[in-house]
Amino acid sequence: MLGRAHGGFPRGRAGSAYARRSSLCALLALACVLAPAAPAAAKSSDRALVNFYATAEGSHLGEPLPGGPEKFIEVVDSPKYSVRVHEYGETFTAGALTDPIYNASQTEATGAKITIFGISRSRGEGVLRGVIAHEVFHVFEFRMADSAAQYSALGGWLIEGASNWVASVLVSNDSLVRSDWKEYLAKPTRELFKRTYDGVGFFGHMASSGISPWSRFKVMFKSTSPEEAWNEAVGGQTGYLDSEASSFFRESHLGSEWEQTGPNVPSSKEVRANPISKTVPASSKPLTLTAKPHADAIYSVSITTPAPGKTSAPAEPAVEVVLKSGNARIAATEGGHINEAITGQILLCSDSKGCSTPHCPIHYAPFERGDIAVTGGADGGSVVLTRRKPCESVQPEVSCEKLLPGFVTEIARGIGQTVGNPGGLLQSISKPGGSYVSECLFLTKDASVDAEGAFRGAIGFAMVLRSPSLLGAQTFFSALQRTPGLAPIAGYGEEALLKLMMTTGPEGAEYDSEAAVRVGNEVAFFGVYSTPGNDEADRPHTLELLRTVAGEI
Image 1 (spheres, rainbow, N blue to C red):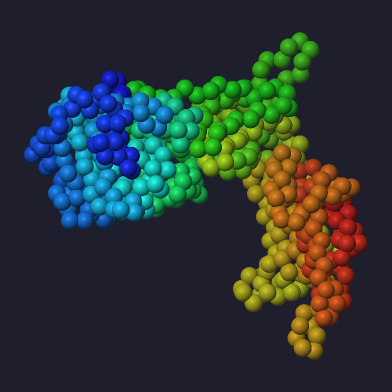
Image 2: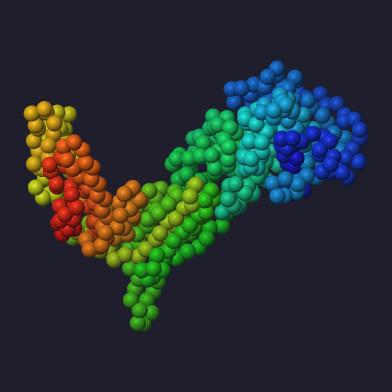
């Protein structure tokens, strides 16, 4: 493989899927002019190291090389000190080169050749072992991929980052891989797919968050794109995503989520990224913290209320934090002790006296200054901080059981008795902090069973959400807007959605309707489904019901 210089020293890179020594000569004419016609045979020590790491890596993967490393891998010690190669948009100095040997259809690697250059020995045994462990894993990469073309499309972050992580795990004193770790840890905002050797950090964080890269390598290298490989590795893994960005802070006293550890990882004294400093505006203008897709961003945020001017009013001490996309984590470093993942909405208070009152028992976490880390994930990350008046969101709790006039709960409660739950399909929960959720399923109106045992009438469901703040309700309503078929309708509450369907069968028309409405910090969502001969779910009845529900909340 070919390598890139770090601190004046190279790391290798896997050869092109079609590379042979002759094709390299075409690219590196000067290097080939200087090279002797016949390469030197491998030193016995290098051959032994290749065999050792091939056996170890094959064991971790559960798939040894066919015929063993002696047969599958040719090892050549080049008398040349190094070569230069352009790859991944950069120019690299080669410490070693690994070329695959493919079958005629380029769909299976049947062998490989590792060429080791003199520069790989210039920094001692630790670096040499790291180079060889790195190169040997490229051989396994060729084997795991479905074809030469598919392999080359995966990108340097995976091809080189994975090999670097393997070297990092198997070689304890590899100063070269430590340099790549430093590159990763210093630049959280660098997009993953633009990384190469510093992609080691992606796999290192997989391991430290409980995901074994060894168990994911096969599916990753069979992927057809970087995005697919990423998703196979960590897509949907909240443990990884919630702490990917925060690990760049290197603040071990805040917990393992705020630190990166592992073999060859430099200490926080050696490298740490600088967070971006932000202050929540004194006005109601929101502060938005973002991270690009497949990248991270770390922020030092202050919400301390600034001293008011002679004519200005003091800023509100309460701040609402809402996760809009991606994953995020927050920890107070001054004026509080909050330390958790941001999974929806969090309320903060910079007033040492607190923001709650006896008639407004909403929970606010004390916070003056702290760290906020945003993981971009597949689509980018966004956290919004907005000053709010304390207690602006206190409104009465509305039970779903009373939301739809004329609909009764007998059948829902009967189902509950059958399954051993007296509440049946009805529940209302008040949560600390002022949140309230009430959900009802299988409400019925004009219900009956005909002679053939078929249900007749209308069936409904209803849900009421009270958020501790306006933005929380708006965020929930925005999520409902993505429900297929629901379309905005004006004139009901502050914003409303409606979906109407009608089908005609042998017995006549059947209607289905769903609707949502928001008033302040409360959202109601309901649906009605009627059997032939019942018009409770037609347009006039649904609009009347929507107006009634808006009035209730």
